[in-house]
Length: 370
Image (cartoon, rainbow, N blue to C red; front, side, top):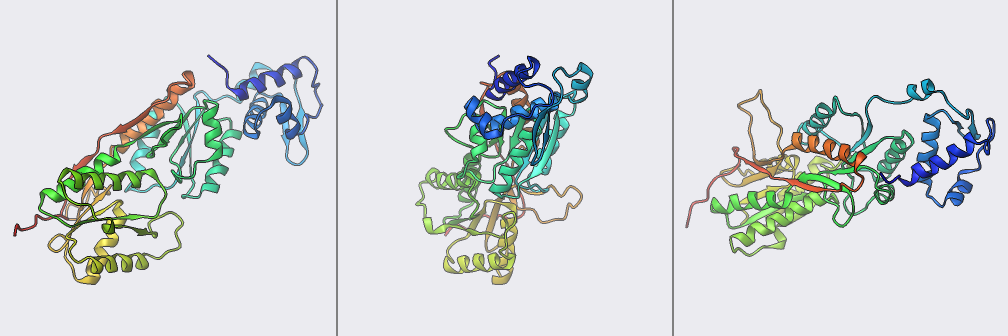
């Protein structure tokens, strides 16, 4: 199997230590010097040094330097630093019962006998995402599962890891044109299915409300909404696409009431709209509040559909939106399997989507034909 760049740097430094070029007690050159010597990036060098540290060759002291502490660590020393299974890092933007909790259950339960997984949240902050990636590199993880904060801004660290064929799997996003494995629902198909359902019920003026979040998932759902219009040979009105919801995003400082007022104004501006697609469950809840403010009833005056929905197993009387259900558990399982495969086959890059499921609820009603 072809060695990754950081493994080559590790091998060369280890050989220098074992042959006495870098004797016990010696201080390694500064990181910038080593980067120039091996013609590698900071990420590659840090990963090689972390591996030397874990194998007992060096000690890294903050603000002091890196020192050789052993020319030939015993097998017992090395073994105490090894896990019985691969260690994976997982970065989620956030998770709750609407989306994420079941996905994580799939990952953790499926990996129970196959890998250890450390989960951290970025809360949609690209800088925090970079920090976590660096932390995982320094921990010498064998692979990374990531639900990126953005599809428009791609982490430089992620791009570098991909160029080195480091095991990576992107969850719930599609990063087209990049050699990175991904697993998600077919959100374009989901958008088409849920929009066509409204047309089948006789709705002619359908709007869609989404957040300002820069992720491919939401863009795909809007594209599916547009395709749903094409399927019914109905003109698509760009004015019916409302993209200004902010309170549902992680770490948002915009109040829920502000977004409720925005939705109410949108519905007042386009009174002909009889159905709405919400790209997230929490947006559907905001629409429900806006309807209360306008004295509109769901579904009598306005039909509402959404993506994802908490299960509410123990509350049979709870109001349920008609919604798209994702195979979250299966996504988690497949993500782990894809990562495990890449450890032995770095070129096993695969982009996969799973079919969505339309679940009937209490939030839609057929329109009377004129």
